[in-house]
Length: 324
Image 1 (cartoon, rainbow, N blue to C red):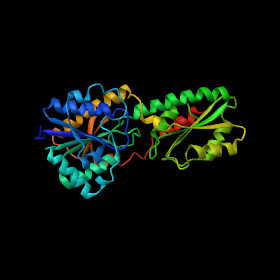
Image 2 (cartoon, rainbow, N blue to C red):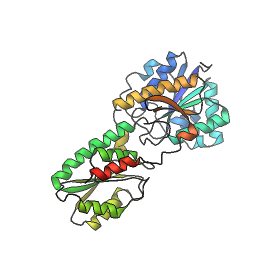
Image 3 (tube, helix red, strand yellow):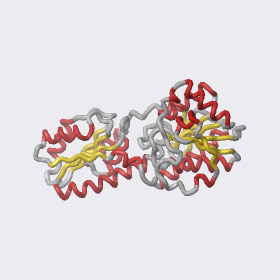
Image 4 (cartoon, rainbow, N blue to C red):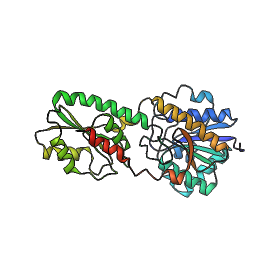
């Protein structure tokens, strides 16, 4: 183990269910290994402004089941500047902090990479984002909870769709990634799934709607928010082609980020929190702790933030086969 004795943890970027479980794991793993632990409020902005607090095991009691992040999160324009990062460095140096664990996504890891480059601070990352779009881990913290939230919502929407013979276009989160839309689309029996990674073939979608079973009492189309046109435009195009359909739109929005984390997200966050601390103490820096095929793996930030832009063709094929 290294000479790192003072470790701080922060959450940055969009919140995701399971971040609190990760904070808990980091704090308690650090204490277990004899480190003094700190929490940074409001992400990198708190690092710049000195919002750093001492934390102990009691600080993270009864939070594993809570959504959001007890440390809060915020975007930080100041940290994007050299001057802002220098202020952040001075604040942690003042407290003797010589190791950081950052929980977030690509923006979080990009900022961490610059911080390491300029001030040689050991930093290890934990993937916390509902989009599941980071390379170097099979799943990110929050993804499982988010897709289960979508599935629960769409199941309820289908109840009213069947009652009124309606077609619902449901817009889900995923500005750059369609993985929430794709998996939730399969699990809810959607007629079509529109994602930013693939060009939308409206002709094929309209053909499918026209040729699939005429006696269907409900139809669901899942659209990722990052699709070029979004749920409202998709709904208008369907109305133009099928004026006899009763088409409605439901935009799930930030409901997908909230709520109690699932068992899978709690366990994942716990494993990655412990791994991040132990990796830091073993001398790792500039790497993200992830889980691949059930095993802890470390991936350099530069590789982790290269989004997964290749969607599993088998998943899109399943949507096609099962929608008939």
